[in-house]
Image 1: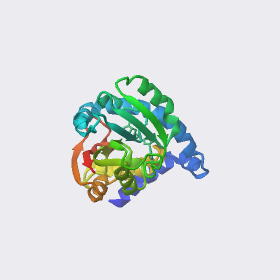
Image 2: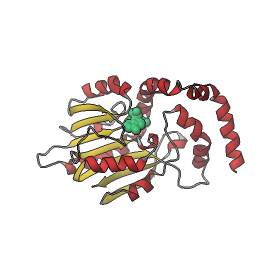
Image 3: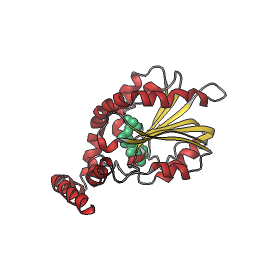
Image 4: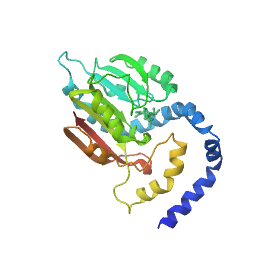
Amino acid sequence: MSLFILTFQLILYLLAFPIYVLNFIGIWDKIIKKLFPALLFRLTEMYNKSMEGIKRDLFSNLSYFENASKEINLLEIGCGTGANFKFYPNGCKITCLDLNPNFQSYLSKSQTESDHLKFEGFVVASADNMTPVPDASMDVVVCTLLVCSVPNTPKVLDEVWRVLKPGGAFYFLEHVASTDDSTLVSYLQRILNPTWRLCLDGCDLRKTTWKDLEKAKFSELKLRHIQAPNVIKPITPHIVGYAIK
Ligand SMILES: C[S@@+](CC[C@H](N)C(=O)[O-])C[C@H]1O[C@@H](n2cnc3c(N)ncnc32)[C@H](O)[C@@H]1O
């Protein structure tokens, strides 16, 4: 069966050959970093329509993690265009973090539309090295569709743990590898992955993020495997939940 997968991978390599060349000469990353915000803006609109109920349910108990001043200091890592803002409760104090500074204009638009929130700032940094964010400064950290793009998930989870206050929570919603290698989704993921990663800014269809979460330092982990409704097949398997420091 690996020959079958290899053949289809080869066809995709050929179809995406110009992109591979641009990547080889070091130009593609700059192009995708510029194009990605506009592309993501459209894609997240569609994705969020399908995931509205799941997200609303996920974030429904955020206020449980209010601090003694009845506030939530929330850090969203890999915030992108700010698609999650509408799910956060009134008065939440949001710090946004993303590796790509080109999201700023989309983010500003989402911030203007979210006057129920207080925005503390936009940090340009990688989630696996969030030095500008102090230790134990956040009540909640959120990440949706970020881990698929980071090469070192344990490092990100260590950083999330560092910036959370004791008792604080890390909320996640991530597409992951299919747990059953015999399914159509698994075949699609294996065929598409090399070209998908190149074209979509490092997004990896085969992450086993639940394993990293199980090994991380959190004291409690609430994690569910779900099949996302109405999304394209290769990103159907998701994990959703939260972990407590
Ligand atoms: C697929 S988008 C998801 C955006 C947003 N969380 C959402 O759900 O709409 C992935 C985001 O993670 C950002 N990103 C990728 N690698 C990152 C890293 N190492 N550190 C911080 N952000 C990163 C990308 O720039 C992009 O904004």
